[in-house]
Image (cartoon, rainbow, N blue to C red; front, top):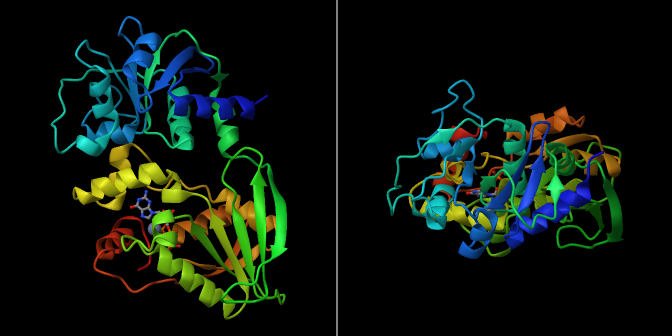
Amino acid sequence: MSDSRAVARAIDALRRGWPIALRDAHETVALLAVETADDARLKAFDVTGEANILISAARAATLKLANQIDAAAPEKPVIVARAPWIDLAGAVALADPALDLATPLKGPYRTLPCRGSDAAGAALELARLAGLLPAFFVAGAAPGIEVTITPDDIAVYDDSRALVIAARARLPVEVAEHSEIVAFRSLDQAGEHVALIIGTPDGTPPLVRLHSECLTGDVLGSLKCDCGPQLHGALDEIAAQWGILLYLRQEGRGIGLINKLRAYSLQDQGFDTVDANLRLGFAIDARDFGVAARMLRLIGQERIRLLTNNPNKVERLQAEGIDVLERVPHQMAPNPHNQGYLDTKRDRTGHQL
Ligand SMILES: Nc1nc2c(ncn2[C@@H]2O[C@H](COP(=O)(O)OP(=O)(O)OP(=O)(O)O)[C@@H](O)[C@H]2O)c(=O)[nH]1
Ligand SMILES: [Zn+2]
């Protein structure tokens, strides 16, 4: 039986800087998130100063620590052995790329075999769900732990089928007076996804846009990305026929607002959007498009035309059982601030631009 309540409590604990335990088939390990640790919490967690540090494969590759142990499994998370000189600041430097360029990393580091790679991967996934840097102090046991979870709990939590329509109402909007908003509640996740059904369904397959939340672009008019113009362009284009805009609360391609802003700060140092995510230790795109498929199913529209430049979105929706009849391009005019971002999408993430 998976326990989503325990996962919710674990996310809460990690954000508050409290330790949790993760139990897999082989062992139970205690975890403390590096980002929310402070000296007192670390000392309470790790009295002897021997807790090791778990980081993701992507972060380890950035630090040139990958493959020291297991060249055959480059995706495996990496455990960095604690040395007496690795204090909290040293662990933060391992976890957080913000200062990579400003302060050369100390070293040498020694990596250890990561036995339960399922558990380690699950721990890093939990960090993403909590919106934290994917890095933990790891110990065999620690005092004061109130939550124990398993990798299965986390896998099921992130892929929750428990999505319901919570409310729907008429919502006249600028582009179409006849529109309806549908709000979804996931029993497991805090973000409330919404669908805006624009215009009147006429039996033809709807034009659909999956829009991922971008506070900076959608609300503040950021010029760094194309999200704002894409959002408003999609509303206009859908309103010219009829269709659905899914507004998905997957900020920063699923890594959360704070981690996205960390990625922006790395971009200020010259890294592109892909390398910034990898340096932070995340996947290039951590979004879950399964939830979009379930939303479409709940509103009874499983044959769609999709407004996107991203063939990966088409593939991932098809894999979730949605029939994508056509990909409709959705290109916006570039500006001097987002030209590089768009070039990177074309060159590195397969966008058709
Ligand atoms: N991590 C990260 N997320 C970003 C960055 N810039 C924009 N985003 C997020 O990216 C999401 C929008 O995705 P895009 O890659 O623009 O577009 P797409 O959805 O993959 O493809 P299209 O359908 O063609 O627009 C939003 O959640 C933004 O918050 C960035 O530099 N780093
Ligand atoms: Zn954006």
